[in-house]
Image (cartoon, rainbow, N blue to C red):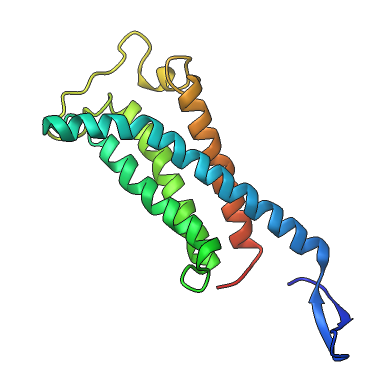
Length: 174
C-alpha cells in the first residue's frame, strides 16, 4: 500500500492523498506499458494486415498468422484505448492482465513458429526448418530475432509485459 499524507480540500475538509511519488511512478509505467503495447500492435499490423488482405482476396489460408495478428491486435488496441476512453468499462487490472497475456502469447507464438519449423506443427502447413544451424540457433541469429522488425516487435512486447506485470504487482484499481 502507498503511504498517505493529509491534505485539505477546497471545501476545508481533510482527505488522505496517496503518496505523490508512487502515483507519478505508476503513471509513468502505465504510459510506457500502453505505448509499447500499441507499438507492438502496430508492428503486428504492419506485417499481418497486407498479408491478411492478400490471403483474403485469394481465398487462401496458407499461413494463419496474418489473420491472428490482425484480430488479436484489434482486441489489444480496443482494450488499451478503452482504458483511457471509457475506463468504467475497462478496469485497469483486467486490461493489463489481458494485454500481458496477449504479449506473452505473441512471444510464445514467435518462438513456437520458428522452433516448429515455420508452421510445420500446424496440420496442413508444409513447414521448413533450418538444417544448417538448427531451429534454436537460427532463432537467436541475425536471420530472425535480430532482424529489425522482429527485434522491435519482441522488444516492445517484453517492455510492455514488464510494465503490465509491475502495475499488476503494485496494485491499482480493479
